[in-house]
Image (tube, rainbow, N blue to C red):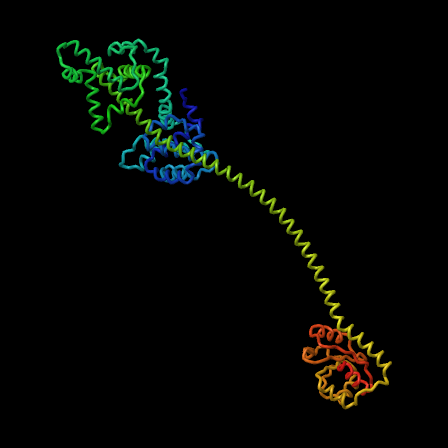
Length: 522
């Protein structure tokens, strides 16, 4: 379907197509396009594969290198539209069309006629190429549409620019119409005439351009042999390339060899049918009608068309392999790997969730066991404290029981024989003992009898009791004794294991000495 001028202005896909061509067709920008494209290569590639720009017939009309860059820009542009981020496109415009970018931002309202005069003036003595001017206009048009800036649509410059774009865009459609089945049917009589003129049978079968050219050669060879029955095969084969149209096959084929192209290989690579021969004949008719190709030029034009079709087909095939096939295979491989990675990530995520649940369960068990252990440890500490308290009192209880028993026996056996006072004193002096408690007066009297005995007053709460571990026995006078000091003594006694005895606190020193003597000797 042909595009009208009003459609050209409104259709954003057309604008995006021409912007891709303007940026990709600028050879100065090619390395910058490469750099931009590499940043998100497969994201851009995927965006282009799903874009309407992928099927743009205008792109395929450009050379391999230009088409590659045009497609890359189209991919970047499509991705930019999808995510609404146009930094890369603007970067390329600034780099390749700096004058356009500056002009756009310096002028509040855009006039294409003024822009073209300004651009031509800037070039000074340089010749302004038409294609450069068209590319600059395309970029300016895009900036106006992108930023919503108004521009003059009434002057001749804008209309001429639109006519050029319209003609280019419609050229593909026009070619389709010119070589449609309808056009072939309309020109069927003239095409049949050309079949008869070149003595081509409608029933003959050929599948490549090479076999068709061999068929033309065989027709001319047969005619030469019929005209000269006595001519040798070698002479006939030589003469066939001296007559038209086969002489052009030899000439053009020779040039291909000079260009280092294997003629027979190339010609037999390209499929060729009767329908395609009809199309070639139709092009010959158009050339005669619109480009004044004469009957004398007809044979050369026909053979040239066949060789051009061969080379162009090979060229398009090579472009397809370079631009699509290799990248598509790599892309599909990449997507397959990506799918496997996603599956592995999903499996890993599942296992991670399972592990977390299991870990949480184990952690709860550990927490429960930790709490249970804490309770057990607390219970153990309580029991240990109870045991310790019991042990603290064991020595005390034993000493008190022994003391009580001694008191009873003393009351019962007061008449028993006892050693002399001097004997007892000498024996006590031979022992290393400590006496704790009792009144100050009582301690002074005891000191007179036993000067070597170490005495502890009851208010000496801060006194170091480590001396106890080096004595033979400890005696406690309970008549006068601080409770706090008593507890301290008991705690220290539990540590040292030193024998402990209680004294009745008699004011009679002889009874006290007898009591000490008996404790030490029993």
